Structures are given as structure tokens and as C-alpha cells.
Image (tube, rainbow, N blue to C red; front, side, top):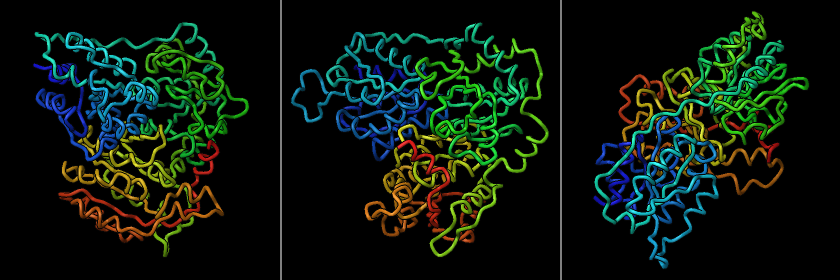
Length: 542
């Protein structure tokens, strides 16, 4: 057995979930070793797509995603996806071939450690045949225990060397959650006891703490909201406000602004989630609970920072909190949430006309047409608020939002990774035309894998965010001629339809009813919205 085979086998024994990549000479043996160990592998059409697939798979499944890359250019092609994963603290392991120590003149030679560290990922390395197993375990533990994206560099000369026998891969028991200090618990209990209108905002770090947060919120009378990445966490709770921030409904924004206590649970309370602080009322106290000391107070001052696991903290606070309070949970508030808590219930002037379908009309119709058991993946752009706010999701695993780096073009690959993590659900990729055409090569991956996916393209014939932000300017560089994206989809093996009115969605309804033998692409020609409701807020940070 050579070291490349040892690495692949060790990772399968450690329990990684799924591998993605583009195979070249540098990662050929290690990829086949993963496959030989029983790990599923998806060959993407571009390393950037493969990186985002691995990221989305990890977020949706809760297991470590693996990305396999050729040295040099294979890694550089994947860097946007790796940067997104690193910024999102996705537990992901990148196996990157690297030039050997003697290959100083190789065309592929770059400083791979410096490259990955520059985007916030962790650079690790298999140093020698003797250390190989320990190096793999160290990289895996860093990914899992610290929730980091780790790039494990595999020098070609070390990969090709004979591996020591036998291979020893230790069992890695799960670590106990980090509990908060008794003093922090007592301070938070005091604030909750004094609050009349508390609101909990749950972020990425709270995705495994749904029941603990619901129980504590019920006791103290708190309303529940989420950041965008935790959308769906409280989907069936009558006291849920949905997403806080730019995508918040008018009622959600009103109720959050009137809160006298805002508690961010695994949520950094950044400019997106708090609308640059506008959602925090002038007299509100602010608490932040997080495992990361650097995150607490990073985006705004807080009155109390609590270092600890979200679920453990909520449970410990509830154990001390002995009261039952109405708080913000009045009959009037509950009725308001039921009547107008979602964007779908907000009246609007329908812009459907010669230029295309109103994106709100499209989104509401799709929400009604598509099965409830869905996973929604959203790309970036002016359109992104519509699928995020209008398409319901069944839980926190039903929404995958690769937006930490704000790159367009990741949405389609996001949907692929999420679809493979949850094959029991219909994957819905919501893209703009710019991002869809950037990622068009992965349409072939969707068709080849036979994924029963719906790809919805909010097609405004340009980069809408720039068109609407730079008002009065020359938009030649950000607008494009109409493109028959439906024809492109058919060329890759999709069923496809062009939509300009609600009636044009009938083929989508027929597809949903079965048998769904091919994925469906919806090229929706969008009427201009003059700039989506969240865009002005978003660009205040630019």
C-alpha cells in the first residue's frame, strides 16, 4: 500500500460522508482509494463546482464533506468555493495534491499553504510515510472539532512512497459540548427575567439546538427568528418570525425593532441579520452566545457575551430559570404572525407584463406548485431575496445558503451537494442568469447523476444588483442580450420551459406530478423590480 491509498482508507475509516472533485494525475490514486473504501465520489465538471458541492453536502448532512484536487491549478480553480466554506466554518476536508520537494521547476508549483491560509482555511500536510496516518487524523479532527475547512496537502513524492504497515487509525469519541460559566448563566437569567419583549435570533451555531431554544423561549415568552443561514429552524412554531435582517417581513422587522432584549444564539448579529443595527431598538439590551470568543462583539457592542455551546447554554439557563412569563407571546402578536408573518401574505402591485413575470408572482406560484418536502439552494444577486423569503422550507436542513463570500455562481453546485445529502427531498436551485451561466457546466453533472432537481433562473438579462445600484449610469457592462437558457438546459438533458406569465408554469406542475425522469429547468424572464426591497440595505455596507 502506498501513502495515497493509506490517506483514502484512513478517511473512510474516520467516517467522512461524500467526496467530490475533478481527478488529475496528482489526485488519481487517493480518489480511487476513497472509492475503494466505499465512499461515494462525484466527478464535477469544474473544481469550483466540486468545492461548493462538498461544502453544501457537509452543511446539509452534518457529516464531513471531502474535496479531491490536482496540484496547483486544481487548487486555484477551487479557491472561491474553499473561501466560502472557510468563511462559513464548514467542516470540510480538501485533499490537495502538491508538488514534491524536488520539483522546484514544476509548472504546477505554487505556495499552497499560503494560498489556502489567505482565505481563512487551515493548511495541513502529510509530511512523511511514517506520519501519514497521524497527519490525516489531525486534519480530520481539526475539521470536525473546530468546524474548520482544512486543506491537507499531499506531496506527490510522499503519496507514492510505501506506507508503513499495519495502518493505525484511532477511534475519535465525540467531545462534550462546551458549557457556559455559572456566572454567565446567572446574568442571562437576570436579563430574561427583566425583559418584557425578548427576541431570540438563532444563527448557524444554533442549527442543532432547536428544541432547547424553543423550550427556553416558551418559558420566558420570547419570539423566535433566525439568520438567513439558519432559515427553517423554527418553521412550524407559531411564534416564529422567520428570517431576521434584509429578508425579514415587514411584521418581523417591526416586532424585532420593538424588542427590549435581543439574544443572538450562535449568530454574529452582523449587518445583514440586523440591517446595520437598525433592527435593534435604542433601548434594547443585546446578548450574544457563541463558541468562538472572537465572534462575540465582533459586529456590534453587546451587553453580555456568553461563551458556550448554544444547546448546552439554553439548557443550563432553562434549568435555573424558574418562571413562566407571557413576555412577547400575547394573543395579539400570535394573530399578527399568523395573518401577515410571511412575505406571501403582503400585498403588492403585480409587475407581470411585456418584460416578463413579477419575481414575487413567480415565487408565490412556485411555493404552491413544488412539494413541501424540499431543499432550497440560493445563489447570489438582486433576485436572491425572492426564493429566500417566499419559498417555504421544512426545517433548517431544507435551506442551503452559500453566501459568506457573496460570490455569484455557487448556487447550482450548492443544490447538487444538498441534493446528495438529502436524496429524499426535491432540490430547488434558485439562480440568477449571471450565476446560472457561470456554472452552466454543472448542468451536465445534474443530468448525469439523474438528480430530480428543479433549477429556477430569475432571468433579468444582466447583473441586477449592479443595474439597480448604479442608477443613472451606463449599464452596458452589466446587461446582456436575452439568452435562451431553456435551450441550454435541454442540451444538457433537462426538461425545460421558458416562463413569462403564470400560465407558462403549467409544464412545471405536470413535471411535479411525475414521473420526473429528467431534471427541470425554468428560465423565468423577470420583469424589473427597480431593485429588490433588500438591495438598498445590502449596498449600505459597500
